[in-house]
Length: 156
Ligand code: UDP
View 1 (cartoon, rainbow, N blue to C red):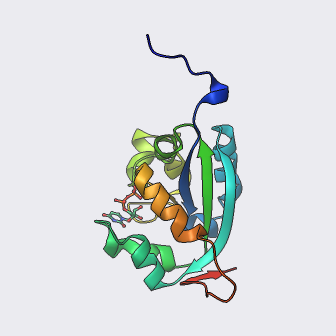
View 2: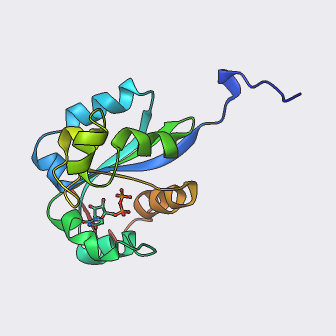
View 3: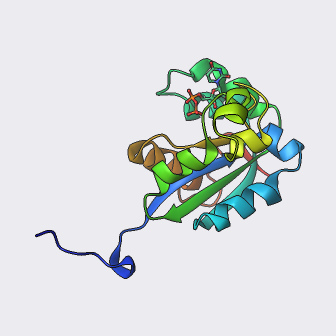
């Protein structure tokens, strides 16, 4: 039979969440953070940054949506590392579908239904796989040596 894992030993996972410029601009940070903690995630680390175009393009680099980075540079973003069991999939479920206007109908309890507007302005990001999560977390939280520069993220 399969070994039984208790909660105490269950493995935690990390994912990368971003409150995008439209979400910050419309003051949804507190509501989104409440949804994060109500759903059992812990925020391990966060940074408020302004991305430039190069940083946004390389963030979406391996991505079919590379051309959609413009929303990410239209204002500051709040980058957060979330921790929980099954964090990657559970955060994607909590944020809901990409098109926020459809999410309002099909996933009314999702974060994108709450604070997004449409396909582009969907207020939050979530890593789409464990591999993306690892890449995206190190993209923003790589150890910086003193004087190494900000690699296109201006700390706010
Ligand atoms: N996006 C867009 N138009 C599209 C597809 C994507 O503006 O047709 C934007 C949208 O902001 C989305 C981001 O590009 O969140 C990344 O796209 P992806 O398909 O990865 O959606 P996500 O993983 O964010 O749900």
